[in-house]
Amino acid sequence: MLKDITIGQYYPGKSIIHRLDPRTKLVITFLFIFVIFFIRSYTGYLILLVYLAAAVIASALAPRLLIRGIKPLRFILILTFIINVFFTAGEDVIISIWRIKVTSEGLNQAIFMALRLVFLVMATSVLTLTTSPIELTDGLEYLLKPLRVFKFPAHELAMMMTIALRFIPTLMEETDKIMKAQMARGADFDTGNLIQRAKSLIPLLVPLFISAFRRADELAMAMEARCYRGGENRTRMKVLKVERRDYIAIYITIIMVFFIMLDRYFL
Image 1: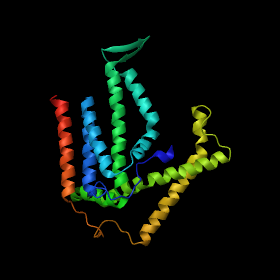
Image 2 (image 1 turned 60 degrees about the vertical axis):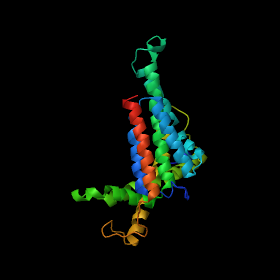
Image 3 (image 1 turned 45 degrees about the vertical axis):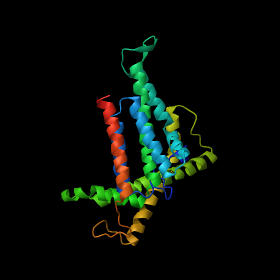
Image 4 (image 1 turned 90 degrees about the vertical axis):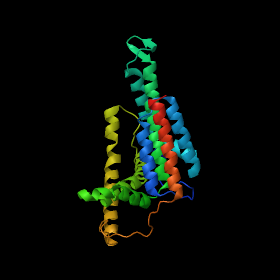
């Protein structure tokens, strides 16, 4: 399951999505996430699905990569679905067993929440799969640059966010290796009650934290050895440049947002 996590991974490519400016992709992702919370009908999710499918096709990514990224969320999706089905009040009762009632409003809410989580994961996966960590850092820093007026450390925050995102797959791989090593020594992570399972994670968490701190220390030493001193007076080998394809991508996204808002408030 740990290998199924796609957020933070980068797949090099030459597709039109790969060649988009990272600032454009960040803005589009923010708009995508923003508009998800305004959808209140299946038509809106259908528009979102068509838009996301077009983005996946344009990025030349294998759909199995995005589907694989949803697998670790199975438990959360099932739990969210059950909570919304049985604890959302409504008038149109579909099933009634003792005090348990399933309403059409609760069922719709459960489906909407599950779809919302799926689209959120897919959108962020497309962003990280098609954008290198360095491009993400430069794009985030540029978008946060106006906050420098308030002495906001835009470069440092962008660097920390990108490093954290980049090391998610590394830590997952390290967790998988430690888990297999502990299982070879007789550790059992699957049986027992909740307390016993929590205790069985101690042999996994302790070496994982030690490994994470060691990697952080090695990264800090490597950055200092290369005379890294933050973003002040820092130059870039590749200067970001917005091109025609970036404007087209933003226009298409705005049209998608317009139709969803039209469906939300007028249809």
